[in-house]
Image (cartoon, rainbow, N blue to C red):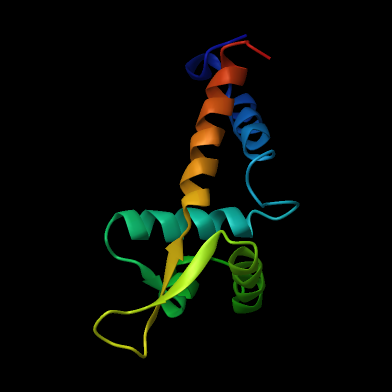
Length: 117
């Protein structure tokens, strides 16, 4: 099997999408994945997002973001936490499950790219 750098852009994207399927809650929509990536990135940068900030960053409708975020919270992918200095603000925090899923995606991608199917 070809190495990732030798794949066409389409083949690379297809393999990446297949690596995502078994571990992330995306179904037919990529909105949940985008929410997880944005929330985890902000959290690891030490700047957890508020709901308002999440809405401003993503290119989806407010209804789509709210629906998918509610599902991610209900399924334990993301939690809400009160801001330490302003109790009116709520931050979105990724669970450990997100880091575990992202690690599995990475491992699956490189496993499938190395030809060890």
